Length: 168
Image 1 (cartoon, rainbow, N blue to C red):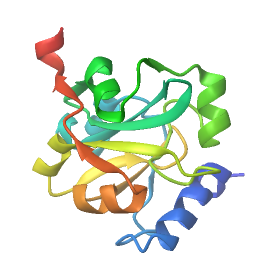
Image 2 (image 1 turned 30 degrees about the vertical axis):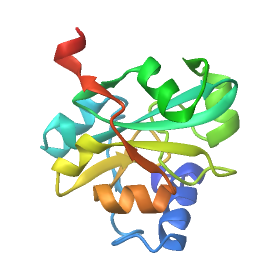
Image 3 (image 1 turned 45 degrees about the vertical axis):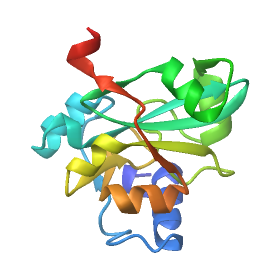
């Protein structure tokens, strides 16, 4: 089976079409090599790293939470906890990621999951006319806009972190 036919990518294409996303099915780009990081995806696409929507999967008081951050930002878990009213927000282990998203780390898409996941979308992504997000496989991404990303995920726009350099 080619990556184009991978179940994760197919689920994302189906979800994009169902959500009425612009250019949904044709917009998925599948690379020869994995682009598991924002830097790798940005390099492969020839765009700024900030235009990459990182899918970060957390457990907020044990409940699934997806935080889509700009590749130029790092999520501040204390800030995120405050935004969702949780006492504790922690990174989920790979098994929890797969259980809740049906996808693997490095390819987690903002949509196409077995059930809806509460989602926060980094407001910094609004500074880019085109935003790229993972498409259900470490080799696949799709283009969208900030507004569309919020709409198709049913997410909430939020200031979820700070520039990566500021936190180093």
